Length: 307
Image (cartoon, rainbow, N blue to C red):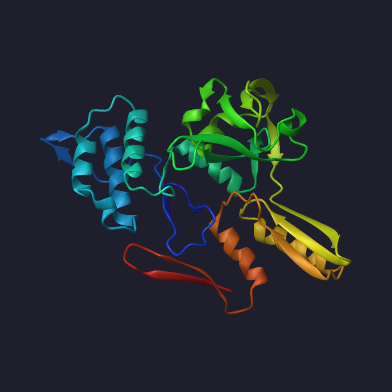
C-alpha cells in the first residue's frame, strides 16, 4: 500500500504476502490544520499531523504496536521544528514505533528516484541499490550495490555487485536507506559523482570519480542453455516496472519459437518495484482463473488479483 497525494503510480516492493505493507510518501504539505492553544500550526507541524493522519487511516494493525496512538500525534504537533528535515525525522521516528520495515517515509526526492526506476530509465551511473543489515537482528544498515547495469558508467569504472557505498558526493550513506542514497548517486547527465566504496574483503575503501549518464535499465534478459541434454530457455527479471510484462512477453515469444524442453523464470536479485508489473507477469504464466495474490486493508476489505 502506497500513500501518495501527488503521484499516480503506486510503488511497492514485491507483494506476495497477504497483507501488503505500507510505504508512506509525503510530498507537499496539505490537509486540514488544527490549532494548539489557539496558535495556528506551522508548515512543519502540519506535515507531521498529516503524516499521522494518513498512517492512522491506512495502517492495518489498529493496535499501533500497543501504544497510545493519539498521544503520539499530540507530541508531534506540539514540537517546534526548525526545518522540514526535522519534521521528516519526526515522521520517521513515528513510523519506526510501528515495527514494520515496509512502512517507511520517503521525501519527494527519494520518491522521484524510486519512481524513475519503476518507469524503466534513469540518469546516474547504472547501479541498483539495496539496504542490508550490518548485523542480523540489529537496526544498523548499509547501502550495497545489488546489480550493475552492463555497459554503464559504474561497470566501466570497475564497480561490482556487493560493493558498499560509504559516501556519495560528500554525504555519509551509512546513515541512509537505499532510496535516500539514490538521491545523491543520481544527477544530471555529464555531471561528476565522487563515490567512496568498500568492496567485500577489503579493509580500506577506495574513491572513484564517475561521470553520470542516461542509463536504460534492462529489467528483463533472456538466454538459452543446455542442461543434461535438454534445452532450457531462461527469462531473468531484475525488477518490476511499467514495461516488464511486455518485455517478458517478447522474451517468451522468442524463446518459445525455439521449442525448448523447459522454461525457467529467474528472480534472483530482483529488487521489487511496481506492484502491477509483477501481477501482469503472473498473468502471462498462470492458467485462466488462477488467484495471484490478494490485499487486505485495515477494514478487512479484500482485493483479489486473478488471471
